[in-house]
Length: 325
Image (cartoon, rainbow, N blue to C red; front, side):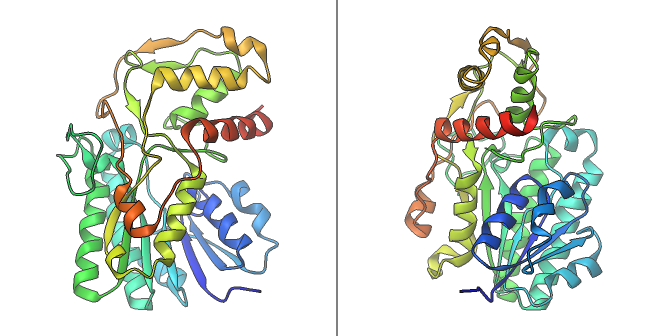
């Protein structure tokens, strides 16, 4: 049975966005993908071009007219488009702000004007800033530690104001270190897991920033898809117009991460076990420890993540081995 609901996925050619496109096309939604291909890749979405329910708009969220075109006849927006990376925002705060704040406001306004039912957007765990409390609970945040963190917090403020002022339903998902298939290992701002995997496959030593004891709540892509679907479809009035941690609810150190990667990759190539690890300086703007409380999402959205860190990592490693060699 075909689904007559339409979803706009901004940043749909990126890592998370393309996985969302794939998932909702399989559920027979009509999917519009908006992406300027600055950090996303056409090869991530090329398999969908044959699907009559898929439409690709190559455009930039910084252009309001493009946002208006993309939002036409849309029921739900899953807003993933952003310039990620703390180091990138420190190097170039103006572009990060243009994309992540002005682009967000364009998309939110276009969605309001088009009568979109619900606007679900990618928020960030970086919003917790210098708050040292663990686990991270949604209503306890600190001061931002980077321009990127500022932009993602501003998104939450705008979403809240739009919900109160204009009545558009919004839900923010504070992503915690998402990883999995299609995450780009290349470029100066590549995420740590695919970057380490690519280095290990090539028998190169991965560089850990600091002593390796910084910890993260690494979150597998399928848990993130699950949260987007729950946020998009919830009928619970208490569950909307708020933000949720989107995570597994456990943490692992960078040392743990490298050890697991070596363990799982060495099943394909025994030599990977012998690759040495190098330690470099800590990165500016990095939070030492990150761990999410997922109680709010459990209670209000019925979220129960399907993949633990290790289970997700096994799946990811298998995909990387088949696709990155």
